[in-house]
Length: 344
Ligand code: PHE
Image (cartoon, rainbow, N blue to C red):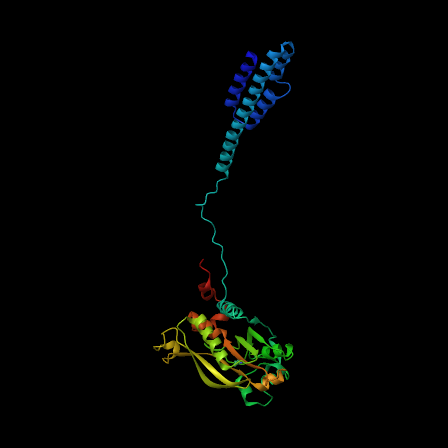
């Protein structure tokens, strides 16, 4: 028994002094293993009386338990020290200056388009698309603009050949969507996209620009639905205080047709250069879908009505962000584009 207690004392001392996990493991193998001093001391058990053996067994078990516990405790201490050491070496110096990564920015026209998409998708619309190289049939004929119609002059057209052209507006997507629906409503779409006209480029005109068409076809659709929709558009895009004003106008594909103005967001209607001192800004064209268009596109005008609108995306972006030259959108000038870089 003295031998056992001596072994214990010696082992505890070594465990205490031990500096590495590997040494600790060696100690464990040595003291608790089959060839260690404990095992050797146990050999003397065969010469003991029954009582002596029982007492000896108890002490040796206790010694084993104590040593195991001491090793386990030391192991945790050494592991923690090892981890701390590792962390010290792997520490990242976050005060080190890094290279600024040049990030691109969302183009202001894309920002406006995405905002419109979010707004109208939120009202249950879906986004439709159509080709930019369009046939005369869809761009004009089905929009109630037969050949020789004087209103064709309103849209100076870039022709590819006699029957093919660069679409002058996004309205042909109305016809495409209606024909696909086979006379069955409802339809609720917007169509943002590029459009083309034979314009001389200046500060407010561009031969290529962007529109966002809107079309709703259903039973019992009235001008009040159109007005409510456009009012919501004005408030969401230009602020809660905006009001809209409808002025009679003419488009061959809508009847009646309106030109829509919004109260000036720049001067709150008092008068400023942006609204040409009128307090109102012309923003889009709209109207009730002409029954002739409904009919040509496969809908029964006795059953279905609809409204449509066409928004100029450049105009919205120019008003919203105070941009004074349409050419800025297409020049790719970083001095302009970087102003729209995300700051977050
Ligand atoms: N397509 C018309 C334009 O480009 C805009 C518009 C669309 C007007 C839909 C009324 C209804 O001028």
